[in-house]
Length: 152
Image (cartoon, rainbow, N blue to C red):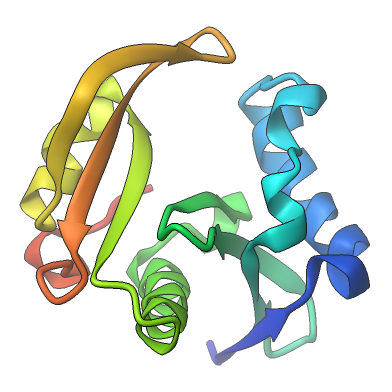
């Protein structure tokens, strides 16, 4: 399957971005809607992955301070190719913005996974929307999705 990535602005693409994020985070993961959408959406860089039938199937964002997040992928497209496209697009934006490091806020189960990709824990575990999370950081040149195989 062929995919394309679009860099989009929150103001112009809010409906398109929200549709995917609501489906994944609010309905599937049961994250409260008021926790999913925040003021950082207004200033973040957003990307959409679109399939060959012109369906939006994934999204992610990069905040000005280098935090990668809100990675939402339609269930049937959760595979290495889509994740690689998303992260490559976000890392490209980070480089264009002159960022040296990127960070993520992952669930505790994801710490080992992100460590295998070059990330290191920063600070203490904290709660977010009732989920224990760990902030992790990585030098932009050390981040690699090819170190581990992504699974559903």
